[in-house]
Length: 172
Image (cartoon, rainbow, N blue to C red; front, side):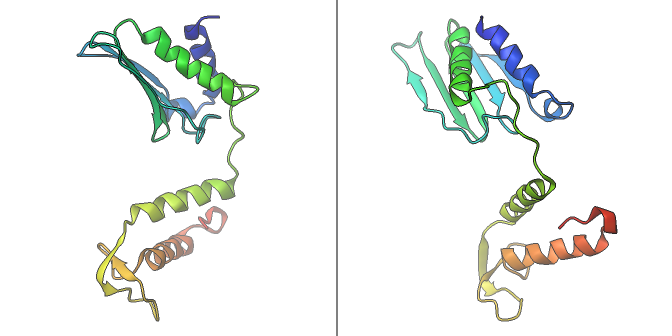
């Protein structure tokens, strides 16, 4: 089977009516010249899997680099390397799972909420101070744009969202 056929199968196996609206595969040309490939790994069975970076540059005209970063497979190479880049992705995908076309199990409501909460917490940024958090007996420094530390600011916001959500749509 060709890498193009395998890539089509992998893409189709992840299309569930939602994934393809936010994620996908991008193949583009580069101006140096060459190819660039980006494959979104979020919400696939390859998310959080380790990929050993590939970097080979025997000459200015012949080069390839593939790596995973920020939940994306990224491959770059000279004009003759597109099939090789896609082949590296497909070989890696097949090596990670016995049934490499099986999409991941859907997230439970609890797991989805946990991931959203962790993402929100990360967005709050680092504690900067020098002022301390205004929450009673807290010894942490405040975060930017707040009088509280990350933990207490997140609890305050989540509590407000929880109280304002309809009973059947509680966020926490």
